[in-house]
Length: 458
Image (tube, rainbow, N blue to C red; front, side, top):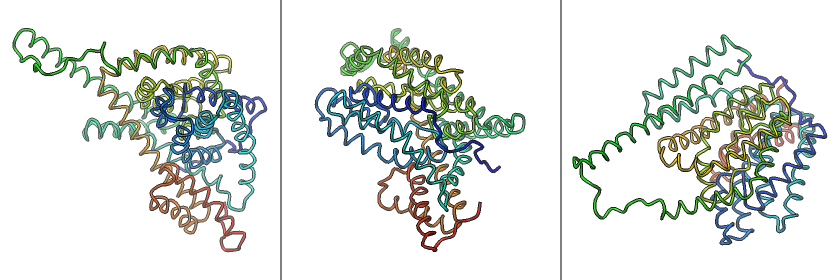
């Protein structure tokens, strides 16, 4: 099946939407300046030193830029241009950097708002210009949608296989394939991978919870046997676990208290992100962006809802350890926003969800401490998401190259990707292929103007 987006990929935003994006970017930069929330999960662990004054603002800015630049220009901008839908890498990673960089509180929202203006005005102009080029690489990039949507469906299968073995992974793969084929046959207007992903994630969670419950039951049995004198007691030199004297427990409590003190600001942030999703000009992930562009909002909500399970433990633990939360929280506000009927309900829902998330952080941390297999499952899910999307984006980028100019275009774009690998990946692998399409598309246009390349006719 050949998938072409029915919706226009041009970034046509109303004035209200443009002003809202600018205001939200100003808010996220301000929150980043206060070290209350950042979007990049890799930056969050460094925020504790910044909050406690052990790291300077310039050094923390350099860390944020180094961890984010590849995703901004290699993934966020190309995905927005290809789908016509904004994404968090394009909006929130730059405001992480600008907020930390700003020397004063009043400067942070100004810098963030300026970036929002660049996105809503500059990106639209770049989009229109690129579509008028002889080699229209933005239209060609729509070829990424099919491999991204279908290969992304497999991420629960990879996670199950890695954590629970080949047998369970094979059963999950068979189940997902059957559900994809059934959905395509019976409900052709629904995204074929939605039911399959739901089944895969539920299987993974069920396997993990079952393993933790069995392990806890065995530990309780051993404890009862020790009390009855039927099992050896712990070694005399073994230290006892005393949560009251645990320095990490104290740190977690301090971080949770710090975040709760700013609860009203987080509620405003949650409302803003949820309203942005409700406007249907924003997608929380690679697959979601193309689903939003096609008007499949309920399917997009399902995709981001399942994806959320891979990030809750990471976001919760890094927030409790660093005192800085996620700009999008646990990302539950994304799927809520997609399906809510109006922005007023989205604002209320987003504020309530963020308030509940911040208030429940300590409890979530304690629950995760008792469910090690569930924590491991989230790590496997994140790795599987990265792996499936990496392959899908690479394959889709080569499809885009083929549409642009056949073998010569594949040579240029594939060569740029391989060159990035050979140079030690100055652009992160997931972002390298879309970046290669954009750079390669510009290069192919230059070659066309020099009468050295002829694009394929669409």
